[in-house]
Image 1 (tube, rainbow, N blue to C red):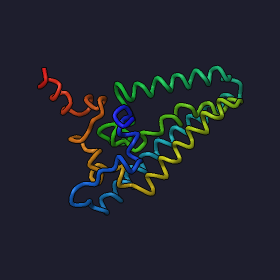
Image 2: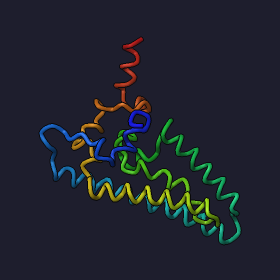
Image 3: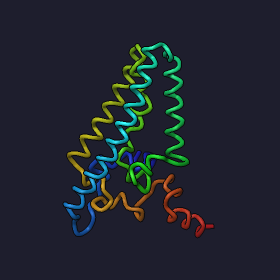
Image 4: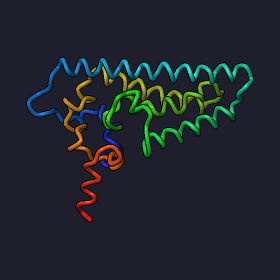
Length: 181
């Protein structure tokens, strides 16, 4: 699976951590994680307020369960747009690409969170699994922050990137394709 799953989704795993030669600046890592965590939680608060508004609209009868499902489908399309075309979170998170994005694995939680207000096993199970993935991601950032910073993990640096989608942000892939023609 390593070659088919983007590195941004795998960086929490030990196998995808490639320590930089000569070590890294521990203070720099601490500052980086602190800054990115503040940005991430800012995104989380904004998103949670939006989801709370959906919950209130459901409670007041403005939205029904079908509308909430359609909103999930729209969120799925928005996730695809973020990955394939352009991501507004890059601006909010001040990141170069998906590989270094702090909130890369939040997508399932963001996508399925409107289902919090839908009764049923399937809706609940989607939200529960998404929440578990989110919590694992956040736990790994707290315990292994060096895996998430390009200055401590060489696998996250542009020169090591193998992500096929990265060419939209990194000129290296585009230049390589032109050179092979």
